[in-house]
Image 1 (cartoon, rainbow, N blue to C red):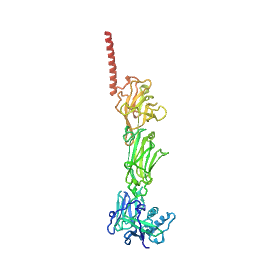
Image 2 (spheres, rainbow, N blue to C red):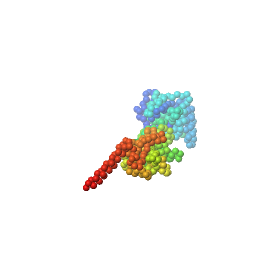
Image 3 (cartoon, rainbow, N blue to C red):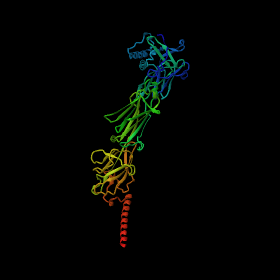
Image 4 (cartoon, rainbow, N blue to C red):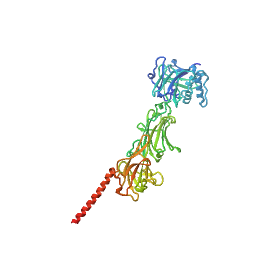
Length: 540
């Protein structure tokens, strides 16, 4: 079959990945110059773990009779069947269905050259190009995340395949149809086919931007207190605490090579977090991003909140970092797992199967046993305490709500609750939903029959390890009367807080013993002063 001539101006991108060069930038002659008889194809934005192979399926010969402005296309003999089959599939997607003119029989690549301006047709053609059995690649290169070159090629039209491993399976990526530079020049070559086929173009620059990128990743995810006045250690939280999350992700440079590049950022939060959808902001550089929508759904099964930010076309953000911020509040469902988690992922196709970035925050608890003397040992219900954040009785007492109905002594932190926590019938006070730190207790309501002027005051420190294990202990702060102590109760180390009926029942050891003797000494001294005064009065 005679070679078909191709003329007319190339539409800046007829051979990029996916079968098209749409959106590609023409290279200057010096950018891709070749030595005599050799050429190369540069794969821009190559991906680590991907292997790119180039197969020459057609010759491209510069027509010197037309001042080097047009080329002749000839299908390599081993590729005629493969090219013809791809042409047939592409023709069948047209409406109405098209048929290749008879004059292209034996040279289907020349026909394909007349169709490069038809995006749908050429993309389908490229996707359905299959390497003939037994055909070796003319060149191979491994991706490294940047631009890599397939070297030592002869000038011509190439199919570039992409292969990589995914889930331990060999996976085939999107094909690219790429023309090398011709005569050592990177330029647009134009021709006109038959009147019935219209105008075709070839963009001979010897490069393309790989669209088969690895799954996009999240660069970083951080969390901080939404209120700068509220302390936050970055690891533990209390119920009702308001947080600000920040997610950063760079849109792949690949986006620049697409006509339209969808991009997604998704965040899945566990049921212990209530997401404030209205607080979500997306920034690009120093300004607000645009062109995105936000969807937020709550699973009826797991209670998880899935928030997805969708860019229908993120092409203009190619290579740029997007910064997403939003607020969330820790709710009491954190108690089910004693932690909250949320995971951010990115995607270019709406499938979130890549590695995400997860933030996990834990919550803690503490408890102590309230007991009296005599028959009330280990069980004293109805004692009331105020709780303060830190190691001092200062500021506003924390508020708690009962987890269950009734006076059972089990409470959860809640800023809308009551400042009073009361020991239950088992003598215990149990507090849940606490961040790590120190908590100071002061008894404010006393059981009938017990001294009201001998007030237990003590501090408990809650610690939470990096894997969420909670421990708490009695500290030395504030326990001046020694009414709080640690003892083994039912084979368990337990913090015990004693109520007394009079000063003689105070512990006699340690600082408390010193305090008791001081009190007694003061009482004796006071009595002595009173006797002396009376004696002086009698003398006068």
